[in-house]
Image (cartoon, rainbow, N blue to C red; front, side, top):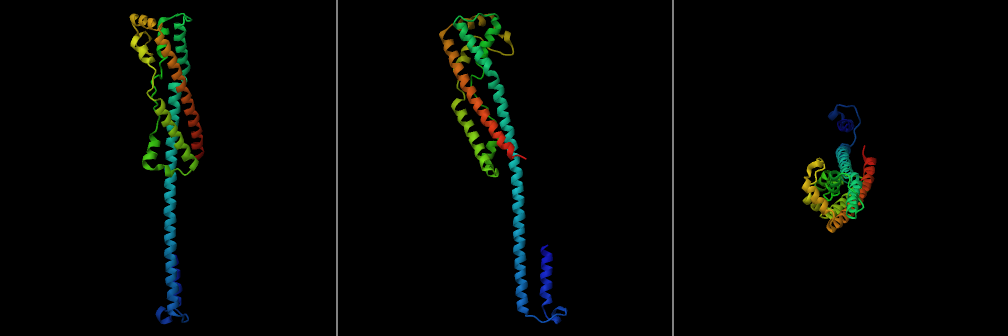
Length: 257
């Protein structure tokens, strides 16, 4: 297109020159004036060409950034879903049984529970310690990449960018506040009889008797209370994470294509 414009401008210039210079039958017009008009036209064409090139480059850059933004959002979406699945599997879906097992142990100490199956009872006591050592394994691969590469600038929606930052700040806060906390319940139970959820018969007869005797101590009762308090605290944190994760997922979904 630029070449076409130049050809038109050249023809206009030549048409204004004397016949002996151009070979064209036309009237004599001021040569200097025509030349200046031609030169001005050339400058305008160059400027137009630069503007078009800049616009094309900007369009290409925006297209690349948009594609990268969508890739990041898809990865974040998958990471957050993984967090929800892991939290549901390891905490939410196990919480009721954990609390019931601890209540059973407390009832046994109080003389309110009569054992029907010793192996089953002791394994439930061991189950009372599930997720008793809190290690939040959040999936933060995409978020860390956004931080390390400056990729946050790619996310065009200000509200979404803020929501992502707040979500991961919350995860960091919860992780720092509760990770690796434990009551001592797990060590108490396992030091008296090893717990193997996949092999209920793992405990020897001596271990079973030793653990049963240990359940009739004030130490066990206090540890069971501490474990219940920790278990409930972790469950509430897990529920809060899931609620905020689902809210963030809805925002991401509205932005993804």
